[in-house]
Amino acid sequence: MKNIIRALLVFGSLVLVVVCVTSRGSTKPAKAQAAPAVSLAAGEYVGSEACKDCHEDQFKAYSHTSHAELAGNSTWKGKATGCEGCHGPGKAHSEEGDPKKIVSFKNKSAKETSETCLSCHAGREEHNNFRRGEHWRNDVGCTECHSPHGVATGKNLASSNTLVSPANAQKPGFATIAMLKTSDPQLCLGCHSEVKHQFSQPFHHKVLEGAMRCSDCHNPHGGFELKQARLATGSDAACIKCHADKQGPFTYEHAPVKTEGCASCHTPHGSSNPRLLRYAAVNQLCLTCHSVAHDVGAIEPGGPQHNQNAQYANCTACHVKIHGSRNSPVFFR
Ligand code: HEC
Ligand code: HEC
Ligand code: HEC
Ligand code: HEC
Ligand code: HEC
Ligand code: HEC
Ligand code: HEC
Ligand code: HEC
Ligand code: HEC
Ligand code: HEC
Image (cartoon, rainbow, N blue to C red):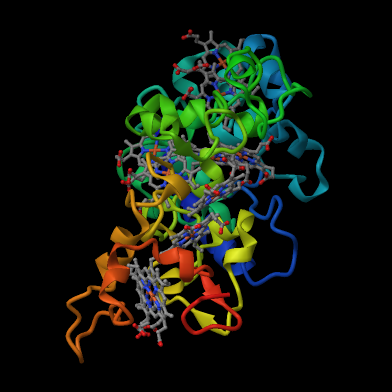
């Protein structure tokens, strides 16, 4: 029986892939774009209400989630939603409560469980690349971060995910946004404790203070960019979202801002150097690329030929508009 269910699910996923691919060109809004594979086959489905009496905890938690809303949504009419959207047809199991007659995730790998979620969620841009990300590769599945049934307390209106003080982030029921098990950044730091100290450096982005989240800069769902940063190719979308003035357009661009990105000069998490710079002194930073002993015809950019003493000076005292300028080819104003 288990094998049959599995076969059905595998077949289902295949159908879904086709559904997702063909629906990508549609102009419908991305919300709820994917339909589950199985249309309700001959009386095998009973609906979530049938599970309520025997699994009260799961039912209660689940009833607050957007998954619970699908059953009443006309686009999902005649499709498997609710408990059975993940656990498969439940009629046989409901009759006697035989745990062998329902899809269980107990012995499933993180990837297998995630595939169940992706059968509906793969089509959205945010999740398209989950299988290309470090989390997928390292067996961090959807349910490491999301609780599949939601949080028992339901939505907590006070739970703004953008202003999380360490104190209120610990409160139970706080992390009810997107069914997260705990709120970002606590969620991420639970596994990435190695980066935590960077946010306590003298100069840092205020993540631990709750002013921003890890996922402002990273896509936890993967992506093509190095370190799963939220960067669109060729521009620093993540940084530009908040530092729009650094984007330009400039008449005179400082090449590395566009080609190598913000992180070529700044440490994004935190730094002991002002302005989150990679070097304690600005001239050190500049001279990593603009070598004083610059050979004519070399591939690296020219050095400061104006005055050899300049190499000891604070370059940005004169080259003020270091991210690009509308007026000066050497970024004076
Ligand atoms: C008549 C009571 C009853 C109903 C109705 C019922 N279940 Fe169960 N279910 C059980 C019992 C009993 C177990 C075994 C409990 C255990 O092993 O702790 C169980 C176990 C499960 C498990 C865990 C299987 C495992 O071993 O990992 C899942 C998942 C599950 N049920 C889902 C559902 C869903 C979905 C529905 C509704 C479609 C449902 N159940 C309806 C009684 C019921
Ligand atoms: C979004 C997918 C999804 C939905 C919807 C869902 N479940 Fe689950 N369920 C899971 C996963 C995944 C697990 C494995 C537990 C885990 O990874 O935390 C699970 C585990 C269970 C278990 C085993 C005990 C436990 O909590 O670990 C039961 C019982 C269960 N679900 C019942 C239900 C019932 C009843 C509903 C509907 C009210 C439901 N589930 C809706 C995905 C889902
Ligand atoms: C039957 C299809 C289906 C399955 C299977 C499914 N989802 Fe969903 N899920 C949806 C739809 C539809 C929505 C609502 C629209 C949206 O946000 O995409 C949704 C919403 C969500 C949300 C947003 C909730 C919120 O309140 O913002 C999360 C998180 C989520 N699902 C996680 C999961 C995880 C994790 C799994 C696997 C354990 C899973 N889903 C399995 C269809 C599904
Ligand atoms: C490493 C942790 C992590 C993993 C793994 C993860 N998520 Fe998320 N997810 C988040 C965080 C954090 C948010 C909320 C932040 C945001 O909105 O970007 C979120 C938001 C969502 C949302 C609601 C916002 C949206 O994009 O529609 C859905 C749906 C969702 N996740 C589904 C999934 C599915 C499906 C998987 C597995 C394929 C998954 N997530 C894996 C952390 C994770
Ligand atoms: C369950 C543990 C776990 C959670 C929770 C988690 N991660 Fe990860 N993450 C990993 C593992 C394991 C890797 C791959 C190994 C590594 O590079 O550390 C990884 C990789 C990454 C990478 C890529 C690192 C690289 O070197 O390429 C980033 C970025 C990242 N995670 C960000 C996040 C963010 C943001 C969150 C919270 C939304 C989060 N992670 C939550 C376990 C986790
Ligand atoms: C201001 C944007 C920003 C924020 C906020 C941010 N990151 Fe990063 N993170 C980056 C960038 C950009 C990189 C790539 C660094 C590089 O190329 O040197 C990175 C790299 C990483 C890496 C790879 C390991 C490493 O040190 O290179 C991990 C893991 C990581 N971040 C996790 C997190 C976690 C966890 C949080 C939240 C506590 C977080 N990040 C918050 C932008 C950010
Ligand atoms: C969610 C908004 C947000 C994002 C995304 C963001 N920043 Fe910031 N950044 C801020 C805020 C707010 C401050 C100043 C307040 C503070 O001290 O945290 C800041 C401060 C800085 C500073 C120091 C400014 C100073 O005067 O000392 C630098 C440099 C910086 N960010 C670079 C980056 C880079 C590079 C990225 C992308 C990897 C990035 N930021 C992404 C909001 C953001
Ligand atoms: C070529 C090196 C370099 C690159 C690339 C670079 N910066 Fe900077 N940035 C600097 C220097 C140097 C300073 C300090 C200027 C000073 O001395 O006042 C600075 C200062 C800043 C500041 C604080 C002062 C201000 O002007 O607001 C922010 C914010 C900032 N950078 C954001 C960014 C962002 C966002 C990017 C990517 C789009 C970026 N930087 C790319 C070198 C760079
Ligand atoms: C990551 C490498 C890198 C860093 C760091 C860097 N630059 Fe540049 N810079 C370049 C490149 C590449 C060009 C373009 C050279 C060209 O087009 O010939 C350039 C161009 C310039 C120019 C325009 C004049 C010219 O030769 O085109 C000035 C002035 C300049 N940089 C000053 C600075 C200063 C001051 C700093 C330190 C705050 C700095 N640069 C840091 C790579 C860098
Ligand atoms: C006292 C002001 C001042 C300081 C400090 C300064 N520069 Fe300049 N820089 C100039 C002027 C003026 C020019 C334009 C020279 C010309 O083209 O006539 C220039 C031009 C340049 C150019 C274009 C190539 C050239 O030499 O014409 C580069 C590259 C450059 N500076 C890098 C640097 C770096 C790197 C530092 C720090 C180590 C630095 N500058 C410090 C004033 C300064």
